[in-house]
Amino acid sequence: MADYIVKGRVWKFGDNISTDHILPSRYMTDIEPHELATNCMSGVDPEFAKKVQPGDILIAGKNIGYGSSREQAPQAIKYAGLGAVVAKSFARIFYRNCFNVGIPAIINSQFVTEANQRDIVEINFSQGKITNLTRGLCYKFERPPDFLVEYIELGGLMNYIEKTITKKEGVSKCVKV
Image (cartoon, rainbow, N blue to C red):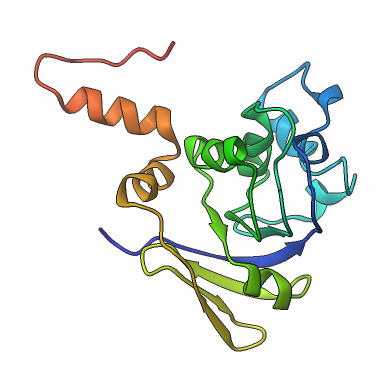
């Protein structure tokens, strides 16, 4: 498997960022990807979606993603173009939903503590390494299992399932439900 690398600017938030901070429930009436993206993080910074660029990295303190278990919160992160979420800790369901929609989720307290807003970082998921290019610092993290890296590379769990099922003999098409 080739190295999977994301590079971008850091957008740093504090502890206890809920799914309602990431995507307030008032934006749940229209779940088109564009609408999710334009409202990403609007519960904390209403202008966030206008500032973020593809590949940027969202970092947060402890307990990011607590609250409801809806997948639209990590989807908003994905469709806004963010390349990864790095935090001191994640709410369990949010952590898994990140991978399910194709967004890498990494735990590294030291990196979160030491990184500054808008630092440029590079994350190599295959090697389990974060490099803060602005500060010249390198951090190791427990790399995700290969199947989760493949989820990310394919754009999420549903694409992974489609690829896996269509490989099996006798299956010609996978229908998304």
